[in-house]
Image (cartoon, rainbow, N blue to C red; front, side, top):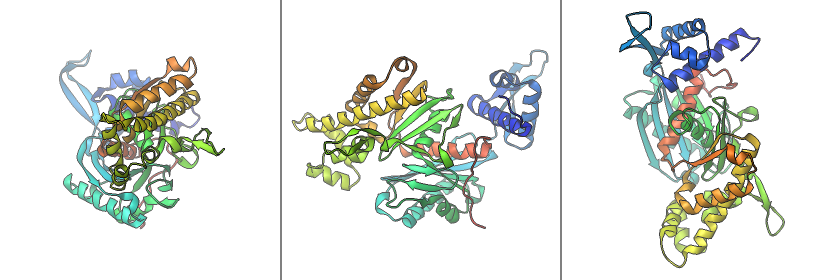
Length: 406
């Protein structure tokens, strides 16, 4: 990469080297030069400074020697105690917390089932605070040893300011959630969308670990889109996350615009079963999706209407995914989220809708995969990865975490 700013170039190279060490460590300086296409002088200078700052650590590997020397080769890896972060996922049916070290290794995690959507913003903030404090204690740490907290929510989030523009979690818009968390915990707080956190979770821990360009679609109460380009999350103006639920896919019978969320969100699918009294009770108890899955697996005569609703949702999702591929042409697009619990009835319909709508040669250039529905801990890992990327000092980040008031 060419740039007229030497300081920016050093920051870019530093981040690149750190990311290579994270993904491939323990790794030698020789391999860093080869993978990063950097000179030995650049790699030595940057790794030397990182070792001095305690961000990475050298490890002598016995039995592996330098080609021209008799001493063991020195390998480099991230220093696990360089930072500790907390990933917090706030969902409509529960809160999940994950505490990790600088390598992303989990130190503690917990999940609390609670109907978050019924609570006010201060109550949700209090519940999140209690969950974080408990997880930190279970990790054998204190809040003073935590460098950053990242909370994820479904919907549209303004990264850096901690402002939740729109989310099914909150009844009102423009919730200053980052500031609420930071003031309660006394720790810098980041707020990110579920979809962006899932994209980083895939990049750090999942099927896209060795890919720098891909997209993730999160299928839950909101329908989020996370795009990784050049190893970095692609964000909109002011750091806004992408929610594709408002994508127009047609018109309704009365002439109103038909949007993806009208057919394909968790709430829309469950509303298709509202004539069933048992489903209404299950939805009220936060168990609607589980009830729908059980109905799909049954052999009863009433399963056909359930399958029709699910297949309609899947077909709409497939068309939306084809539109995303048309815009970005990623080598891989991963679908994830709780809606995938609906199984083959949904995924087969997605595949059909995608096949019908995607154009050649994009159909041969992009692979679509379904990530098994993850527990909240996986989203917590993704949230922790967002926080760690902030600590890495990515030169592309233009905003930082919300810090506690003095």
